[in-house]
Figure 1: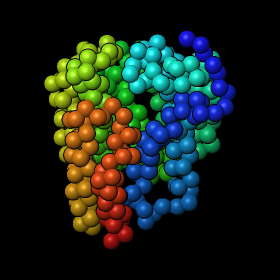
Figure 2: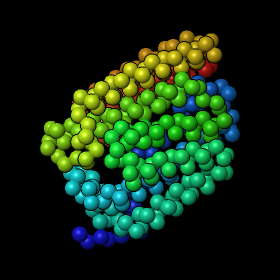
Figure 3: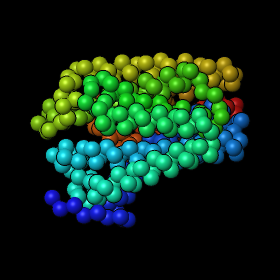
Figure 4: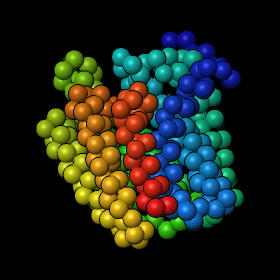
Length: 293
């Protein structure tokens, strides 16, 4: 295959997976029940955490795509990725990845050492995933899930708002739910269509993955409810408890897509399911109402 490097242009932009930056909005979640005490400094901190994760995650995606270039070329969809298709040279991708990772950590250093530690932890885990953990059943699920949890933690640290233990648990189990849904979709593709899937995915049965994401869904609903009750007590507002309704409905709506085998690209579900977006908006509105009522 002929490899043509495109220093600037559509190939590199696509390789950065900008559409997946929607996941980084999770850094905003810790602010929702604290809207009445937000300061300009807190917003700047969250913005810093968001940009940091955009840079770091894009750097990791580039490293992962270079590492998996041969496997991606055999994938019905991933073979069109810029590195796998030859639109971007691996050497260009690695150089850009290094620049993005260094830039993200330098940006975090302008905010706090704790934010740098969160970013560095994310990089260590994700690079370990690219090089080794992705071939280890269960451990690779934990590595994928950790990325979402660290985003929520970064939002709390960047804003200076102490995170609730229940919120972090809900974020953690929610992350596992999304990660298991991704693997379930990939396993279904292999089982239903006979597509070539990675060895680690073949090590899971569909029933096992269904068990994992079902258990994770139950735990995230339970821990979120405990967090919402805490918000209700702290704010003396019934809206904390009301927020459980759109949250659970949104989770169940997302689960419909997972069960159908469409969970391999979570950002596509979020961006294209209008009812899910409506439920997400209602959830955010109830938390803001809990703050100001």
